[in-house]
Each structure stands twice: as C-alpha cells, then as structure tokens.
Length: 254
Length: 304
Image (cartoon, rainbow over all chains, first blue to last red; front, side, top):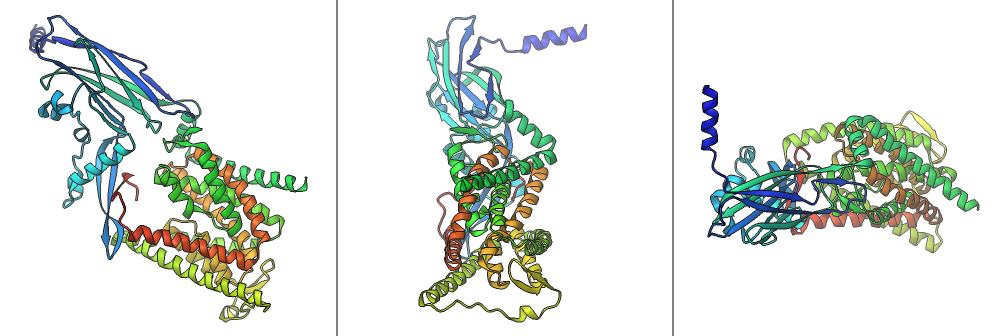
C-alpha cells in the first residue's frame, strides 16, 4: 500500500513532458572494415507534442560522443636553450570523438547553466577532475585548451553551429560525419530540445561502432593471445623476408 | 587506397606505407641499419600513435633485415661468429640499459639528457666517419693504397678468437664491449642501434666495411624480434596490418639496397652512411633548437 502511494507520488512529481523527441538514425551501427573510410550518419526526427506550439522559438542541439579515455598532454619548454617536454597533465577522461550540431549559435540556444548541467559544449564535455591534484602548480586550463585545439585540427572534435535544420518547429535533421580514424565503442548520441536556452526535453541513444571481420579477429587475438599474435607477426616477417630474397634470386638467374 | 589499421585505429594510405617501407628497406640493405630512426618520425607524421609506431616498426625491421641478411649470405659477407658475439653483448647491454634508463628517469630530466647525448654522439660519429672516408677517397684517387691500422692495444688482449669472414684474429673482449655499449645506448634511446653498431664495427673492431653491413643486419634481426615479442605481449601495440604493408616494401627495398651496396666502394658506402648520420643529427638538433609550432602533444596516459 505504501509503495503504491510512493509510486504515485513519483509519477506526479515527474514533469509533464510537453514536447518529446521521436528519433531516427540512418544507421545505429557502424562497421569498421579493413577499407573503412569514415561514415556519414544522418540523424533525423520529429517533435511530438500534445499541446499547441508555444510562442517562443524551439532549438535543437545534438551531440555525438565517442568512448572516453584518459589522455596525457605534454608541453615543451625551453631549457638551457633547447626545446624539451617539461610539464605534463593527465586528463582522466576525454572523448575520442565529439561533435555538436545546433540550429543556431550555441551560446544562444543553450544557456550557460544548462551547458554546465548537461556538459554539451566541447570544453564542458572534457572532464579534467583530478588532473590538478597530480600536477599542483600547472595551469591545467592551458592543457585542456591544447587538447581541444589538436583534436579539432584532426577533425575529431567538431562544433557545427547551425548544422541542424528545423522545419515548422517539428522536423529536424543533421548529418554527422564520422572520420576514418575512429575508435570503436558506444557513441552516445544526445538530442536536446531547448526554448530560450532552457532544455525542455532530451533524448538519448547509442550508435554502436565496431570492428568487424579481419579487423575484429586481429584485434581480439592481439589482446587475448598476445604471445601467439607476436609469433605470428614474426613468422610473417621472416616469411616475407625469405620470399623476397628467393624471388630476387630467381629473377637474377632468369 | 585507404586501409583501417586494427590496432592503431587509424586509416592510412596503403601505397604511402608500401613506399615508406621500400625506402627504409633500401637503406637497411645498403648500410646495415634497421632504419627505425627514420621510420619512427615518418609514422608519427602520418598519424600513427607513437607506441604502435615503435612496436610495429620493430616487426618490419625483422623482415627487411632478414631479407638483407639472406642476400648478404649468398655473397658470403656475413660474419656469423662475430654477429653472435656482438648479439650476446648487445642483449646484456639492453638489459643494463633498461635499468639505467629507469634510474635516470627517477632522477628526472632524462628526456633532456638523452636527447643532448644523442645529438652530440651522432654528430661526433658522423663527423669523424665523414672526414675519414673523405681522406680515404682522396688517397685512392692519388693512387696511394688506403691503409688502416692493423695492430693496436686491442690486439694484446686475451681470449683470442678467429673471425674468418672478417679476416680478424682478436680477443672477444672488444666485440663484447661494443655489443654491451650499443645495447645500453639502444635501450636508453629507444632505437635499434644499427647506425651506432656499424661505425663501431668499422673503426673500433677494424672489420671490412662489406662484412659489417651483413653482420649488423644479422644481429639486428634478433634484437628487433625480441623487441617485437616484448611489445606484443606487454603493450599490445604491434599492428600486424601496418607491419605487413611496411614489410612488403621493406623486403623488396632491402634486396635492392644490397645490390647497390655491393656495387659501391667501401669508402663511398662509408661516406654516404656518414652523411645520413649527420642529416639525422642535424634534424634532431633543429628539433631541439627551433621553437615548435605546437608546444603541446597528446599521448596515451601511462606511456612515456
């Protein structure tokens, strides 16, 4: 009896979802084969609502985030007239890939507080908790900026303001291009509906990126049977060396 | 044609890798060096993660050295006995080097020290070799037979051994010491040590240049095979797809390299090697002296 009351209370406390996302993906699986050259994923959907469209404008923010891994950032400095790596900071988690697409400038479509809460913008998506404790007198901020700068140049972090097309405040779509240098894992895809910078609804799904076929087999073998894998590499090397030598001998005779 | 590498997790152009492998293979066959010093920065440049580049290239060097050694064996320019002595010294040296490296690392600033030593060392070796070969070439032009010192303090040491292919009858102590010191340097600097080994064999042991190349390749096979296994089992960073692409070019290049090498005079070979060592030294020196355009670099956490 008591738990039924509690359940009722929770249901009542849940905010009434005025607008909801109905999502479609051109594919929810990306297969990395030996000749993988990157992939475009079309993210599209509609806004389901039971009430009439409110007066204020609707915006859509979509983020796709690759698996997070710890990263070490090093900085070179001049010592005794030469440039060497001096300081380094270990960032305990940074996504291997991160893309944000919006209907307008991020500052307008998402308020600072909401960004802070949902970690949408690139700097917010990179956690650097604990980094400062490892290097007490290092300017961690600069290292995080450097990471973002380098990743952006590699096209691994993408900020695409205005890339989401929104029709009639109901239908939206965008294309996220995943580069060829993709790490496998679960790619968290989040869609936020915002009004005046506030998130009114959000939806989450996962794009599964996997190595398949030969790639899968080699990767698994290198992790599970490293000794055999190493010996196989050596066998290939020796066989190739011998093969080339034998072929050249035949060629010289012939 | 783009190929996705399963361990490196990057996509690269297959023909570019074949070409790179071939280029380094030629150098390997000609000079008896592994070519890691050249391959590592090139692989970094195309975006292969450093840990994978270093491990995989060891595997590729096994292939090109093996290909080169077979070519040299046919020409009977491999001193197997000397190679074995150097190898024993080298393995002991590598073990010592790892201990020394960890000790230096605990004291800090190992990076700076290693780089400085490296540049100075390469500069001195390359410079000395360059002028020596230049003098030898001038002498042969003038018609005077080039003479190398046949006897020194080295020949007074005990435990003499006959190295028939090299035409030497010397104590095993100098080759062992050369092996140990190259092993230490290789472990500290993270290179195979071929282009330190080659000048050492020519100038310290007095081996004929032709024999040196094959013998160096012979012992490189074992060192790099050991390195490959070590990386494969501890760091899981050997990328077999990358290795295959590199080694197909590498084994063919090594055959051509050997052909070129045997057609050249010893002095010419030495002067070219000297110039290559000086170029590498110059490149490293520039890296240290010029301000890099990007001060920051990324690495996987836990690596060094």
